[in-house]
Image 1: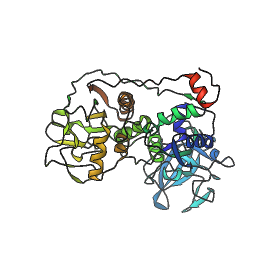
Image 2: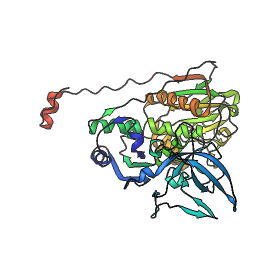
Image 3: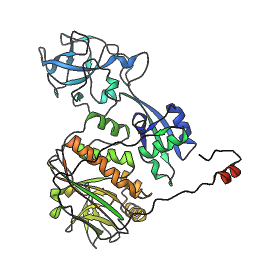
Image 4: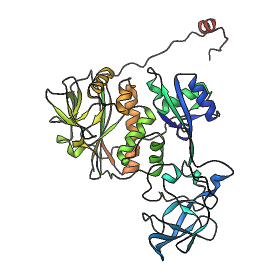
Length: 428
């Protein structure tokens, strides 16, 4: 798992440096493969060369059909003329600008003023790939409105970061999450664990959500939520950047939200296009003999009666905890989704995954065992993001389980502990 430290520090307040955090984690419960420096080099005031800009004018270059000639306000009083090859923006756009002298990631020479087809260009309007925020180079970054021209770009985007590449031991699946890592860092580095502060969206127009779990051994808990009026589209750049640095590909705002929340809590989620489910319902059962499912990777899977399936009562729509099916996939046409935040029995998921030769980031977590109590906060965070980033309205919620396990209590005897380890550790 890769954990950007700028993201991790949202959940733990600690004075330790990145290298100290990496060292302490390495002697704890996981392997720290490396500490990766990503983004804009932080040398000789380089970050100051990157600013927020507002495009005042944008039009066709007089001497080139594929270039735009722009006037950009970067907070200097007079606008800068910049030549740009992208066409996904126009006048009024808020953009990321590199000024002359800026050193881009992986580039040895700093930016310099130069003439492009006879017109002076006094900077560069930047794409995600040029800042190592993502792989997209088809257009430049268009920022959300609000940041003033001249604002340091580092205050708006994580253009500079350090990423921990870690591999927890098999018994520490909790460390496959930002919250779990934050808890560990707080304990190891005398830090303060910070809550995930999010408000659950209200249900203003409640609808019935039908979920039936026929195999409660394989699926001890199914937390389902329904949203209407969803607008599927690109994710904001901050979300794409976090997923990119966590080695996840951005797909759409809804799918990205499920992957983002999985990284926060370690509890995988899945979103279905509810309009493609028979009567909009969910039934969790074992596969029927001879049943098939075409998964999201396009492969037609031959199912075994031991495989746990998510169905709509008529057909299978997902391999539980492993991969969704193509038939219920969220697309740009989706307006209604059913969000799954469930809990699955690990051994059965491992056996199905191995039999099919299908390992995913989700199955990797489920087969080790995921905290059943993580489903609800994961659903709440995902709900907040779906409302805020995809414009959806939460209209229904259901939590199906036969009783959650009691939270374990660890009893510690300070006197006995001190005797065993030979130290005098205060009880508090």
